[in-house]
Image (cartoon, rainbow, N blue to C red; front, side, top):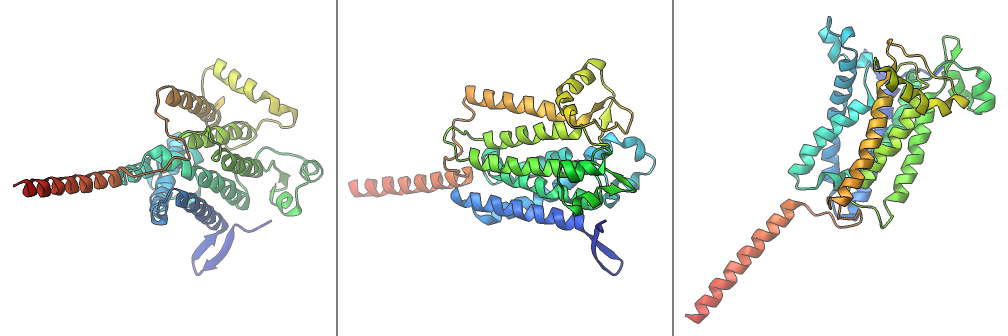
Length: 324
């Protein structure tokens, strides 16, 4: 079994989880900077976004998780702040990052969707890499499986198979399924953003569609899903949509006693909402700009307007002096 602690500096333990997440954030930043250069956006802008987005994501991820597990925290409020004890949620991280960075993007005079399009590949590659942190911690896995399934059916290398052996039981490497799905999604976004038909905002929305489809099906095999108790018809609908997975996988148990995995429900709603947004934005003319069109800050446009107005005024004064 691989150790979750990379190294120690006295009483301070540096875990692989943090190193992997940090690496994921830096690679995502590099992708954004590289694409941003095509639109003449300075690298410092994306570095500032990272400094705002990371803490916003951590806060959002923690609030999301605590909200669904409030019974575990209401009698010990200090535990809410002890994030190193575990308990974060990726959708909460996305919500937090979007809220935090949107203020900065608008303050710099940019359209949110234009910048979000540039960030989309960095987001999905960050998730693809970040899931290996779950691997090191032996968490976010699926239900029990036979060792032969991992070795002979999936042909996984020994280091993955051995890490999926938790207290004598082998489990589905759900982290790996999601990581692979995200890496394929990265290639899809790379292809999509060079298509002439792509409009502003649609790469970002396509990222949500791709990730959420994968998350819906992968979430069904996990054993640590946050769940809720909903109407029977909704639970039946969710099970019916997931049923093709039963050809290969058994559904994971619902740990907290509900009948609906909230991440599955949210994933389904996000796919529907993203598709509707793409259609409405096109019909209403909100996405007339294409992805490849120049990105210009309104601050720059306002500055240029002021300069032009001043030059015009000077020209008028000069002509009037000549007339006199």
